[in-house]
Image 1 (cartoon, helix red, strand yellow):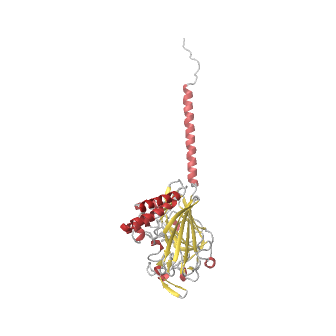
Image 2 (image 1 turned 30 degrees about the vertical axis):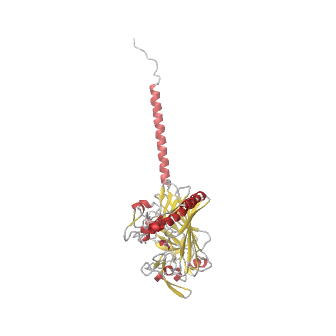
Image 3 (image 1 turned 135 degrees about the vertical axis):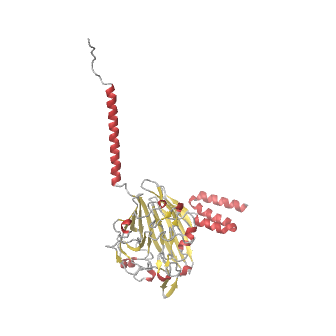
Length: 444
């Protein structure tokens, strides 16, 4: 009895001292107290209970401990209506059983693909977990997206955040070296979600972390495609791929091709039979106008810039919501959802069935299969160094369209004129009833 009373006092004291930390503290205490009765149920609840970040402008992010997943991200549209712009699930099962195509997840150890699930490092050949035929995709069968991360929330002035940590043991999925990975989600008062990914290893190992959220700026609830979105990607080259989506090692200029998105482009204009990309986009861009050689020369421990640089801008004319992506990474995998629901239909939050092209992903990263490609930036993290990859999602809204603005102004003018005419007619009617008609003379 004394132990239970002391525990309650401790939790109450924690609440009073730091209310932003109490969710994690109570979760850990609850799981400890029920572990003897139903450990499985406790762990399921722990994986699904989100860390909730909010700012005073109406932006709200839900981050799950399982997979460090961004489960919900609500932003105001042009009219101020809260709109959830990320695809996901209400329950944990689809994230665990393979239904989820990495919705919202933090993927690693190595984001994207490694050919033949094999690489050579310091004279030794490693065979890692293959989960896409003979290819290793996003860390293998049980990558970081399917691991339980430990987290705690914090505040920085008006900003709120959560830091999550995962300890990957030596040999996990075939990768060498024990690795400590962290990801910090910081929601700012200026409607930015800043994602900082870091890693340190006890032995040389490939490391390439990426955030794999699918967005639909029309709102995930609409079950619409993203083909009405306008996209800009600041890049002069892509890394072309073979039939297995493994880069060939070459660099292809985007000029004169449907991959040229340096000027704002409506996705529907390129994603159809006549537009050159009937299956949409699923390609790695070499960002910031860099050549492949420049990207390789400037790469240092996961980044080519010390501070995130503008890479992508995407907007929905329907809601007016805009997303700008800045990053320190040399590459970005732009995926427009061409394979989504192509096999079994994917039913997400609120029972919404997501269609083909129902979401897009903008994964900031090193290049796919970099560990096996001499021309690509170095992807090996060695002891004593810190891997870093920072990505910023900045949300805003488009101005009211000029045509609509003119229509509203014209309608306002018409209504004002009608009111003036009505008032004048009332004045004339009132005056006529009281008008003097002169003297009246009777006949003699």
